[in-house]
Length: 113
Length: 113
Image (cartoon, rainbow over all chains, first blue to last red; front, side):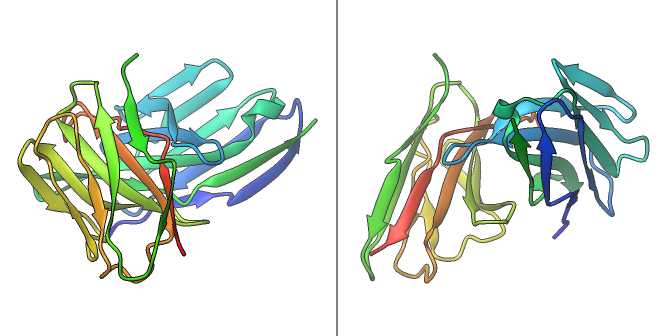
């Protein structure tokens, strides 16, 4: 099945730095979602993108739906210690009339105070 | 508050034993999903249900079974046929199959004794 390439796999940054991560696919997605997961908990939705070219912000987070519909990025500005966690992208693809959500493998973010 | 409740948080299974993981939602969502998460991996879809009394296999359904007798409930049984059941199991729901995003419960961690 379709796979998403999410990068980087992990990041180690200092508090206050900006962060950027992205996801790419070989086929087109209709929706891009970004989630954050804390250890031992379920993923929490951060941003949902529904239209190619769409740029959406949620506080210090900004995400974009790529024009080609094959990629998306997430930026975090002025990182803080509570940003630590695993960030997942997910894309909704159509397959023969059926919709399927495909997840990237995650970017593990560590923020040093 | 509306949400998705998974129980138990931790579960231990003996060899040859079936175990059932509970998932309840009060969001009035039609679609529900079960995912398996292994370290360093993205979420993999086990089963999904678009409506009561209907469910479909996902990418890794072998060794698992589900039922959807009520809209609010979508229990997952890990059978003895699942040879590597140790994982973090996540339940999710969405308004319907076409309307994402999915909202997740806090997960159940299953371990083998």
